Length: 427
Image 1 (cartoon, rainbow, N blue to C red):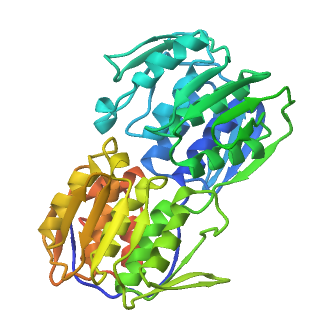
Image 2: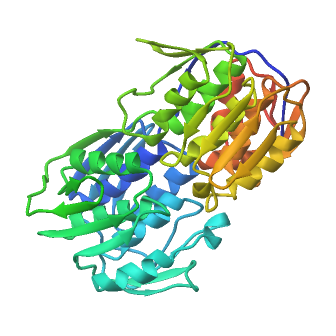
Image 3: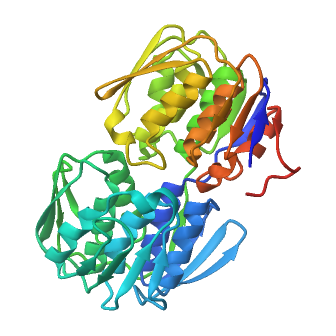
């Protein structure tokens, strides 16, 4: 599917989408917390749907009423011998140790770019925990058989914090007592804060966090009483809306918690550095066009911000430098290269020097671009297109359904001139 975006002016109020980072973690916690859990403001992205399918295959019963979910669980009791994580990197990394809590042999699969992402982390770690594992030379599919037995281990946190998220949840559910997980070079620490916060809200045994270098589980009881959890507004999707406002606003974005542990909340710091016209009010965050200037920002702990930041930097006077490029290789696409190629078509020069991306702002041109099946690339091009000098066509624009299926409809509701293949885009 392709869409066409004309230069547009935005105006209005929009609600941020539900956070898939929060939603997927809540699904896992609800599975691991025996009894009834209610999840409010649930999301409906492809990644969210994958997480719901997984917990049901692992034994949970789910009732859906609008944006409210009721999850009944007695723990991990698989009713299928295979789960599919679709294209969700968080699901494959978080649920693999959780699957390993069972003594049944389970095949873990995925699709799209997930099939080529490295999973040899599990080949190295799970055998140390009594789990049998077989992979396709460090890639999917994975075949695992537990039960996982918590032990003192040390893991590498440099590739993704999501591996650690799965281990923390699995250790808690397995009744870990006086054992620890040591971590070297942990990236994306705010995502671990989110994991620990979700575990706490679901009454799970939360480990002691020793400066993100060691997580120690003590003998603490869990709560079996009914649990309620509200999925946060998504700072990852909200970042694109905020940037859209600074390029083509004025708009107000509701539902973003300024005290959130989500890593992508740091978009606010980047916007301030870029001299963006941002105002925090009781009803939401207002974003207006203004005199944007080149800025410097370290995205090592929030690499998903690279796409909206590149769109922002394209309209900044001067040069912008963003650190953390090494975190971009194993995403839905190699995002550093993809951003460089697609924004070059839009007249924006991007140079990559070691771990730094340098964006030269200027006039943004309308162009025919491609998402490379990457949801954040599609959204970055769409946002940049709002202020371009002519129309932009985005190929494989449907990729947004992975995280933000309502994205184009939300832009349209704000006044963007977006040509969709049919009136209501139900991706």
